[in-house]
Image 1 (tube, rainbow, N blue to C red):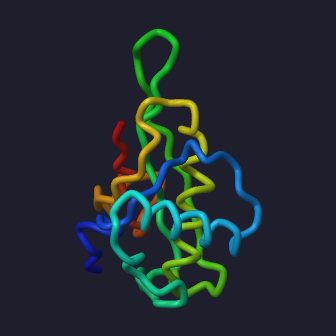
Image 2: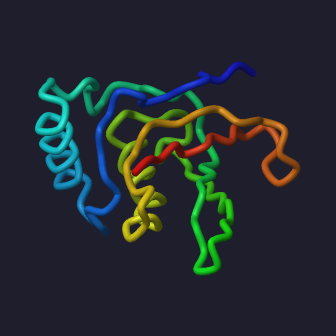
Amino acid sequence: MEYPEELLRNIYWAFSEGTIENREEFMNLIRDYHEEISGSVFPIQPEEIIFNHPKMVLQYVKYTDTEDFEEPQEMIEAENGENFTGEELLFKIHQVGVNLEDEDNCYFEGLTFATNDDPDFIDIPVYFLDTGN
């Protein structure tokens, strides 16, 4: 199965905003943040289907106290069991990315396809959560 090589490259967001429980509040915050930082209109429609698969694994870099790092992986699933809208995917990415809220690399820079043959997640695409500081 083919998966997009990159997703959501043109969205500006910081996981340092912390835990946000309400999806509507989250969308208002991310839209405002993006428009303030970029000076442009938020580039996706919340209900637009942007990933046409029911599951994905997000892998990211988290630095430890000893200057080493780990690469946790977390699976997210589409609520409808088929695909992710922009709103749902961004909200679920934030719920994973909030683990980086106190890190230097807390800025969202998109997703990059890594693999779909990880032995722990056969036939589920693994995407690297690209972050910056």
